[in-house]
Image 1 (cartoon, one colour):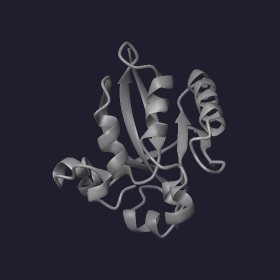
Image 2 (cartoon, one colour):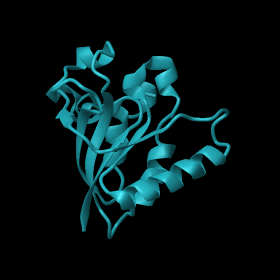
Image 3 (cartoon, rainbow, N blue to C red):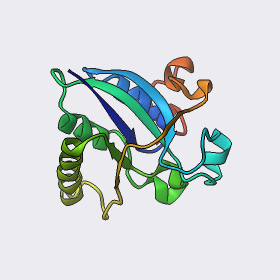
Image 4 (cartoon, rainbow, N blue to C red):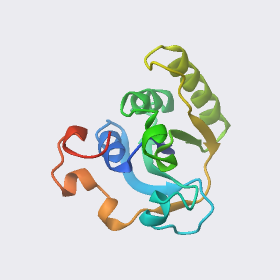
Length: 157
């Protein structure tokens, strides 16, 4: 069965590439979400005028990967303190589509926070899915379009 997920964790370029490589994940899209401006531009989001975060909207096959496992991979694939260094558009946020996703996200976030992986407490937002605005075409599948092999080859970390 296909479900949707909406995850924000740093620059959507790297996050989209990493999530797209996960078996069971399909239809990834770099998006802006969580803000107040309709159809924001990248410039507006970067200037922190809209309240949006850079996120990846995706579908995943629950017969191949659970939402819990998807979140575990998500938390291993990015630095959840990027917002402190680079701005609020990089805030780690899990957007839940239903109450089951909310409960699973709470469990995974609690486990990540208590794991000691990060040297200090991380600030992870948990919010219901709201309006989603596709990012400009040049952001879609950025790594594939520009032959970026890893985050070391790009600004995204």
